[in-house]
Length: 264
Image (cartoon, rainbow, N blue to C red; front, side):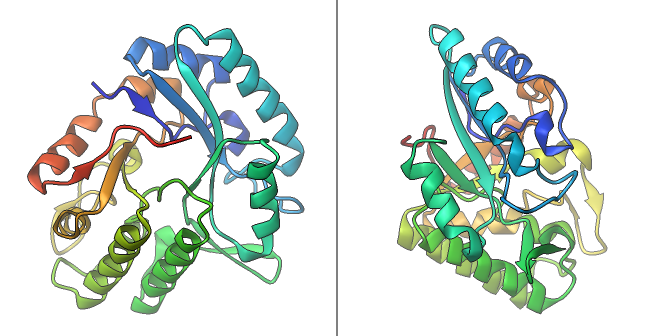
């Protein structure tokens, strides 16, 4: 049984459903002992509907989760955080969120490129070697800040990229991310999200999920990276699913250095 979940979204992001309290109640029903809310970060001056809530939602998000933390203190440990890209333009904002205790933790989910004051390219649609290398550079840059507890879906770039297990560009990107994980002692997340919304598919080279991408985790095992499982819940019922059994299978198959909690 998976007794932790640090990757949980709320309706505020525009692509999740359910009330905050329904997520807590589902987590308790699932036997989860530690629940972390990590909605997509609200960024000042950025309107990005269906990807993240507006900055004006910050107060409501914080007060709601803090109230639930107090209400259910006897039943479950609740933490308040964000899943966030690392955009250097917002470095001071990230640090203030943590320093002032507005949130307790950040996880690095490097979905988008931010340039010229706006969100642009989505890294789940990488098609070229340059794009997946740019993704890896952004992930490593974020890891090196020390702001993030772990990396969510580090294999996100494989959601759109087609190359196959022997593609040297894929191999180089995986090694770069895993080397940084090992060097900086930052865990990598086996993310269960795409297993629910897409499932297995044939990409012309192999049957696989968008992610988790097995060759990534094979290399992570060889390099001794710390890993943990991320439910990436966007609906309370997803906390009750059994997809984590596949992730547990990857942990066993590739002798992954699995952890069960993060220090918050």
